[in-house]
Image (tube, rainbow, N blue to C red; front, side, top):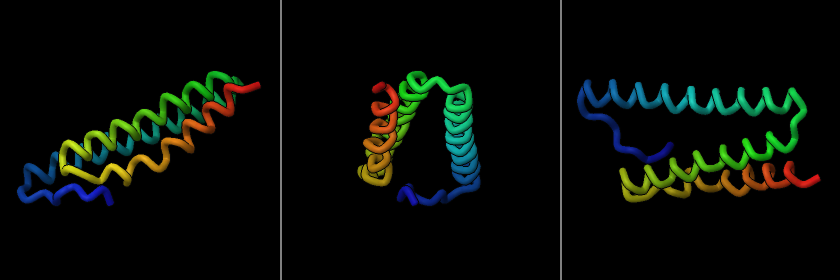
Length: 92
């Protein structure tokens, strides 16, 4: 999905599997954090959290660019949506 090269050795596969677990848990943790803030009803804090969350997609794009020389647009389309929701939540 992100066009990273397929691992060619068992050691590389273990690293790829570990990074996939880290990436997956990061996404779950961010989702749980935002859900907890939403549940508490703090719209402004949720807005800030959403804006900060959008930065993770930017970093993903930069890592992709550095690693494979492309794939940036696999990560960036979500940034304006998440940041826009965050900005909208900050407005009262």
